[in-house]
Image (spheres, rainbow, N blue to C red):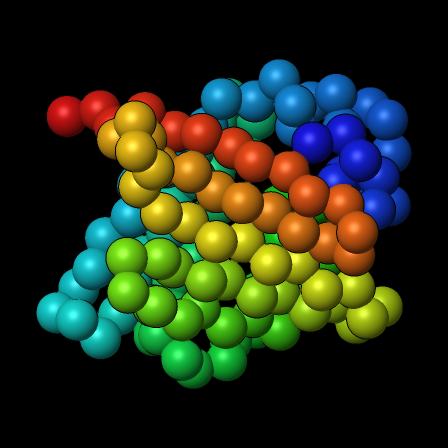
Length: 120
């Protein structure tokens, strides 16, 4: 995760905070046309609303403005974000073999993974 955050030019203090965060993710589908991803933590809460395959303006957790698009590809949610500075982030969300939501992150040559347990 540290190399991924460095690739995004995130300073050491923010990297330490991000790595220690244990956010709660809530993903909702509203009628098949609109989706919502909400990330809640002790530091911040962020909600992203989108329609699959439709580009939208977004702001990342660290405050960068990006153009984003989310595609649903089988059982995976593929989220692409491109910043004004030209950096692209790819996030692929899916349920892995352990029943956890896995998020595979890529920026340049840096890769990271996050895992989330399902909570009722």
